[in-house]
Length: 279
Figure 1 (tube, rainbow, N blue to C red):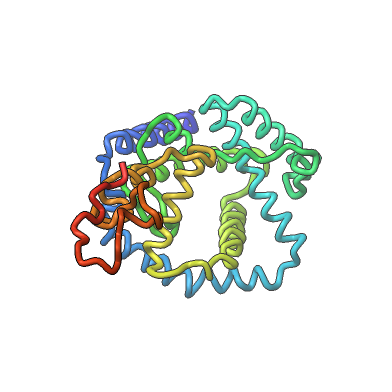
Figure 2: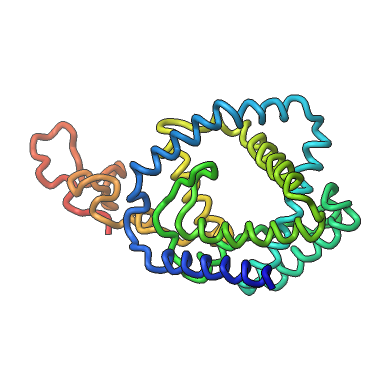
């Protein structure tokens, strides 16, 4: 009975948080930039002083097969979320594939340590509750950097609550751990996830905060639309007046050199240059 009450409270909180996402005002994706940058600075300092050195030690000392098995083990818990969210999005084949992966890897693959499902051709169909909300039209809401957790949005933060509840339930049912053992397991998961990011740190250019924000938002949009995000207004601006320059340097089809109207770089009379903008 007590368990049901706790689950009800969690679900109520989740529903309320979802409403925040529904009423979020569209427009500026980062209206809380000052706050977000402060949290990002805090997270970065914490990472540099504690998490990154531990992840580097893990990456350098642990043999590759063990790292792979550890990653597979934690990824296997996510298959339940994949099954659940694919089903909510009406992707029944993908939902069945995710459920099959969980059953096969949990049993034959020994709690997911060995990815047997991929070896026999059942590929991962990764989905989370944030993607499910986005699939059904819930706006992302403002960009939000969470303490300790990093980049997110109001919608994805909402979704992560559901994902955490499902993962926590699955791990408890499968492993029946004490809370101390759960902390150790959670810590290992954090370290191995951080270790995976070490090779891509060198890709960051310019302002670190802006780079991470833009990559996060673009990748989430890509994930929600299964790799085919809708064309944004900026992407389709080829015909706008502000695309590829002003009107007086726009291209024209009736040119001999293909770089604008009849431009004679040696003539004095160039008043007709660029009279036609791209339609």
